[in-house]
Image 1 (cartoon, rainbow, N blue to C red):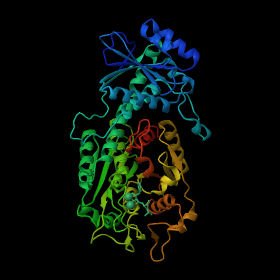
Image 2 (spheres, rainbow, N blue to C red):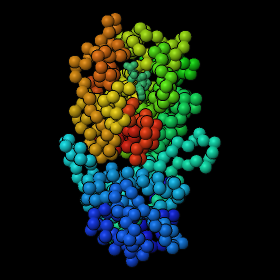
Image 3 (spheres, rainbow, N blue to C red):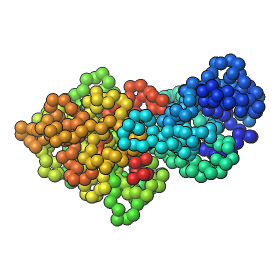
Image 4 (cartoon, rainbow, N blue to C red):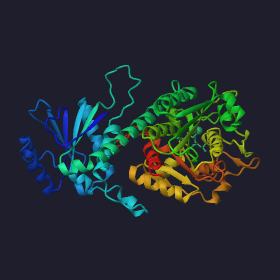
Amino acid sequence: MKTSILSNTKGYKGDMLVYFCDSTEDGFQGFVRYYAEQYPAMTTLTTTKDFTGKFGTSFKIYIDNKNCPRLLIVGCGDTKKLTLEKLRQLGAHIAKTATSLKIKSVGVVLRNDFGLSIAKTSTYHKIGSHESTNATLAEAGAAITEGIRLGAYKFVEYFSDKSKTSNTIQSLSLVVEDPQTFTSEKRALQTEVEYAHATCDAVLLARKLALTPNNDLYPERLAERAQEVGKEHGIKVTVLNKAKIKAQKMNGLLAVNQGSVRPPVFIVMEYRGGKANEAPIVLVGKGITFDTGGISIKPAAGMAEMKMDMHGAATMIATMVAVASNKLKKNVVALIPSTENMPSATAQVPGDIITFSNGKTVEVDNTDAEGRLILADALLYAQRYKPVAIIDAATLTGAVTVALGHIATGIMSNSKELLQKFHSASAETYELLGELPLYEEYEELIKSDIADIRNVGIHGAGTITAAMFLQHFVGEYPWVHLDIAGTSITKAESAYSPKGGTGVGVRLLTHLLRHW
Ligand code: BES
Ligand code: ZN
Ligand code: ZN
C-alpha cells in the first residue's frame, strides 16, 4: 500500500477523504462549524442528527468534487478517551467501509489532538506496572495505518471467483492540516508508518500461512516458503531434512513424524542485524502442519482447524520478515520444527518412550500432546547459540482457551526481566497477554513411573504442565513460552482480526525486538 503524507487536502485526488469527529457537544459543533465553509454539505450532520460522532460509527457525505467525491466522517467518541488501540479499531472501520465500496485510494485527515491526548495503553494496563504516557501524532498515525492494513483482510486465495477481494485500498494519504505540526511531525510519522506497513505485511503473511491447508502447506512446502521470504529479505535459511534431523538426534520430531508419509523438516532462519559477536535472541515456532492427534486421534468435529497448528511457525517466520524489513539492529534466529501428526501403522503409540539428545526420557502418554515433543528438540538446538533469550510460540493446549479465552495469549517464563519486557510490548501493541505461574509444585504433575517425565500432566493446569515440560529443555537460558492456541485459532472476527488465523504475536515480538 503506497502511503504519502500531505499538509492539506487541497487538490487531493482519491476516492474518499476521512475526517474524525468528536461526540461531545462542543467537539461536535466545533467540527461542523470548522469544516462547513469548505464543505457546505457538512451542515447535514447537525440538521439530520443521523450521526452523533459516537465511537465506531460513520457517515458518508457525497460532494461535488471531481478529484474526490466522498467524505467519510468517522465518530471517535470523546477524543480525550481515545487510546492507540481504539485508533486501530477506527482504522479497521475505515478499511472495511472502503473495501465494501471497492475503493482504492483513501486520504485520512489526522486531528491535531491525536498527538496530544491519546493514551498509549488501556485502562487495565495502567493498574499493572506499565505507566501510560500519551502517544505522539506519529504513533497515532501508525495505529490508524495498522487498523487500515489489518482490518479488511480476507483469505481469498482459494475462491475460483477472482472478484472476491481482500482489502481494496492500494494508496493511503495521511493529512496533517496544522502547518506547525506538519513540519515537526512529518519525519517521525513517515518512520512510524513505514514500520507499521512492514510489520503489517508480516502479520498478513502469518495469517496466509496459517490458513493455507495441509495439502498445500505440508512441512517441505513450509520450508520452501521460509526460503522464499528469506531470499527476499536477506535472511539466511537452512533446512535440515530427515537425514540431518536423524543425525542431530531430534528424536521428538522423528517420533511425531513416524506416522507420516511426508518427511519432517527443521528450518533455521538467521538474521544478523546486530554486532557480529553479539549473542542472538532465538525464536522457536511449533510447525505441526496438521494435527490429527495421531493414534490418540481427535474427534472429527472441528478437526479441520488443526491445519493452523503451525501458527507458531507462521508467527516466527513472519516475525523474522518484519525484523529484517525493519532492519532492526539485532541478531535474531528462528527455529521451526515441522511435521504432520498422523495416525498410521508406523505411528508412535501411547506408552512409547523417547530419549532426547540431552538424555531426558519422556513417556508418551498421549500422542496428541505432540507439540511439546517437537519443541523440545528445537529448544535443545537453541542452546547452541548461547542465546540472550529463547522465545517460543505454539498452539500448544486447548486448556489455554479455558483460562484466557480467545482474548489473551498465555505467557509463562523463567525470567522476571523478560516478562517485564513482554508486558510493556503487550501494552503498546495491545496484543494481550495472560501470565500463568510456573511453580515448582506443578513438576509433580508430569512425573512418570517409568521415565523422567510424561508428555501429559494430571489434575488440571494443562497449559502450565505443558510449559513445565518445555522448561526441561531450555537449560538456564532466559525463556518465554507463548501459548497462542486461543489467540491464533479464533472462532469469530474482531475489529482488525479475522476469524481463523489471526497473525497473533508478530506485532508483539517485532515491537519487543525493536525496543529490546
Ligand atoms: N494442537 C493442539 C492444541 C490445540 C487445541 C490448539 C485446540 C488449538 C485448539 C495440541 O497438540 C493438543 O492436542 N493438545 C492437547 C494436549 C493434551 C492431550 C494433554 C489438548 O490441548 O487437548
Ligand atoms: Zn495435538
Ligand atoms: Zn498440536
